Length: 434
Image (cartoon, rainbow, N blue to C red; front, side, top):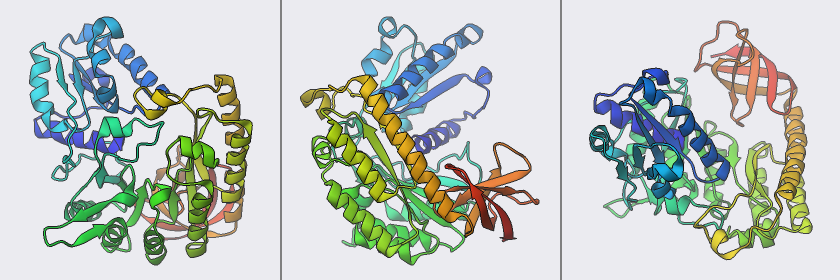
């Protein structure tokens, strides 16, 4: 979501006669687009702000701004130089990017510029993002903003506001334009894409499965991904749509957070471990080879040894292909911070996290080993990070595949025979390129 927002910001600024640069020494304006979901993300932003301050000596007119969720959550602290120990010139929330040109005028005149007002309508549907950091093959499209799930640990409903969906015609138009410009993969983004819903003036309705099918119908050469699905809303209709269209990628990110029903209740996730596994079984039945990834939090408030062991058991049962894994960090203003006690020692959180990581590495390696000997259709993204003699791309299952280069170009599809693997990467040889 933040990457997509950064492209919107780039569009707003270029329309106001600014241009982007990859060299911070050349910049007159530096924006940090931020996330507040975890404390370590905010700490990285604060450290980055400190690192940027010396640039003011060479460029006294340099404007430094904080955008996004952290701007919304820490607005007062960011504007208080004495409290922060550094200077921030602009604080702009995720619904205020259209106002950046006017806010720039305030900052250039020496005033603090701030707009953190949340909107119940803003979707930036009419803004064409600047794909300033794109590989020219894959792109993101934001289809909705905000969240109303109010998981007890999460700040997103408070920093991004009310859930609202974007007009499907503008989404379709953006996807078509990307395909015609040479892009071959798009990812539809939302805090919970399953709850996407648009009601037109003629009372017709567009649900997420229908939107997904509409985008997939643009061309069989256009791959379609999405993130993120909430387990409580993952419908059979969506699973059917994924199964029906070959170019809808066979990979679903389905965050479980914990395998313990009692922990899930304290998290206000609105599903049980059993109902989560019901969704996993439905996916496996309709799409036997579908990759399933997840998010896992260790050390949530009150998590017992037994509750943690239930998470490990569910991981084994679900056979996740990969996972994003974190230890719990309390976020100010959330229900958990107000009503629950962050009572798990940090060393216990860290130890449990390491157990989860070790198990997931085992599961990921087992998943990749099952692919050895098979064929994978890979969308080539560019050279491998480790060798210019190899190219890399992703399979429909969102697995990284590396194979020898033979003059291939980004955006081409290759049928690759998988010959070996690591826990993170499939390795193979191309047998056909189109």
